[in-house]
Image 1 (tube, helix red, strand yellow):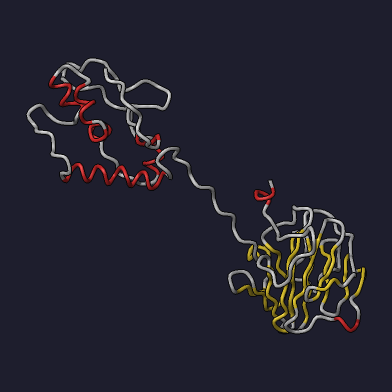
Image 2: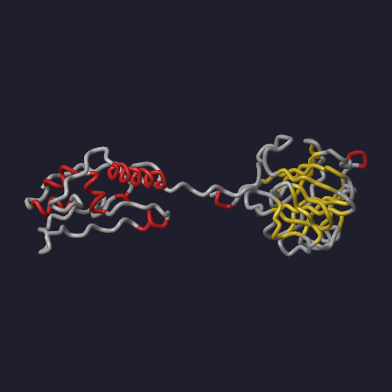
Length: 295
């Protein structure tokens, strides 16, 4: 029997073959003159909806000469090629051969490269405001980047990494606050900072946690419409940056797994920026990463 070279095809295109197992079966044809039935195509191709030719015909298309010459019986050679003894072999380039080749390349396209059959990793979702965790009167628009209405909203990614940075742009002034909070925070009760579940800077420049003022921005440095407010958090302190400048007013005290949080009222409109920042993050701080990206 011929020692056939292995073509560079994904495993799902190996009817009757395996990467480490034997070559196609060399058993004699059955009493009906048919070759042993080849193993079915792996379920991966079926799940993708790829229509492949029968394994016997596919093997004939891939190794026509060797498959037919590997058996001494004319009926067996014809059976291996998927033909009856009386049927002539389709000419190279004929319609059945072209259809078979199209199916092969369709599967190759789905299975990745022709050698390893790798499946590409899922792309991580974008960090944005989470419509599953927002107040009942909150409106989220611009693909999860703008908040208006009344109430608060968490981002869809917790702050797992050591040092995180994110920004908010004040599009319209009013009552608002930004900072971090746990999922236990009441997103309908504003302003935030009244309990242990949130730590925020309010629109008047005061930083609140557990109904206690932790720090305050200078009176001449209150954020105005069009300003960019940056927030850093390192699991100990929260710091505020105004238009890229450190305000040197740290606040701390919150515990547990926290998320970026924002609330609005009285016609305030804020845009969140979790990547492609307006200002360069402070040294050591970076955009929020999902847990899978950290490890």
